[in-house]
Length: 91
Image (cartoon, rainbow, N blue to C red; front, top):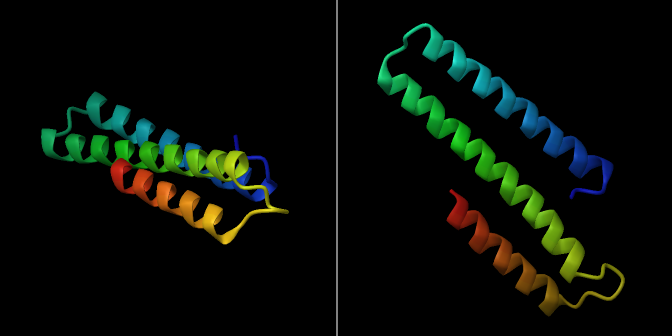
């Protein structure tokens, strides 16, 4: 879970955007929109949720594996590498 006020604000902002995208998708389906735009909206929602997951996971990894008072450059680099790999996978 994001613990700092800035991280929490970022996560809640992403959730609000996803909620808006879902509402737009529901409206499009109720109005009988074409398949192309519907699929594009679903892909956008998937990307937004993946971004949300990546952000929360990054916060978790940093909190669990890096002691800010004693973190070495090697530890920070290792966590950065894992986060980069996860973000690449979630795209």
